[in-house]
Length: 336
Ligand code: GLV
Image (spheres, rainbow, N blue to C red):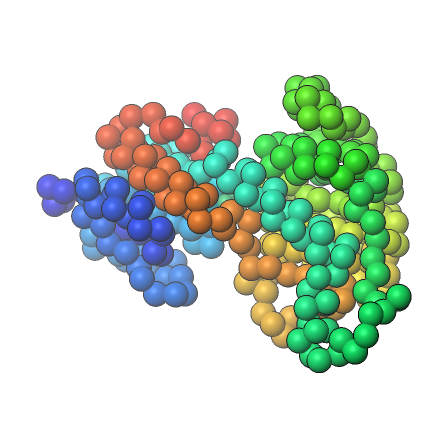
């Protein structure tokens, strides 16, 4: 083991985070555009006797990766989600796991709204129309869509991001419904301070009554495939579905059928299954008229990404020093 602990970073995170890490560690960064293979991460961790690993949500950090370096003290993911990390294996090996909650809440809520507005007001189609030289005159029937103001917003999962999405509905004078594992009076109170009267309803009622449904649940065994054929058929034909959570929460084939057969009118996805979504994936035939897709950029504001990089350094330093992590995924998952 070298005297300066070694940290392996699976992609170039913002410089501010790398600088902070370099102050204390020897930092080895995978600087390719595409991610390293899982076997490569394992090999590098073992070769380097790495004490720290910084990973992304697209890296599969399973028990083999966690066992690759006997000196591994801390794994920090550049994401709030940690469904790509085997937390139980990490806990068993005594490896600290850090993530970046909180900081990206508002930024991700902004993106959910960007998709919602895009789907309602057809801005991507409008842009394509102008670019294609089709804008010959003002059109009374051109690119009409549903009103956002005064509509009903259904929020599935009233955690931090879901609450931030619901809060934004105040400016649009929307009715807000939410569903979660149980009623959340504290969140309702928080929203009431902003003039949002959020009503707790069963999921089926939310789907049947909402004009816009926005998904904000973590990916777990319980939420995988949460929105499938039955759920999509329950939604009004004019409804819009927005997903900024995890791709696997929506059954892609069922969504394809829903868009084909008009069970809903449009979907805006920042996360997909599979992810990345190939341009020639069958569901892309609905774009842009019925489908708008962004490449998992929910947290991608400059300020938020910089802050996430700093949080990575703070978490990793605590983990390598054997201190409690400021943002521990194990703690947040109830494993610590
Ligand atoms: C993004 O999806 C994240 O988990 O940070």
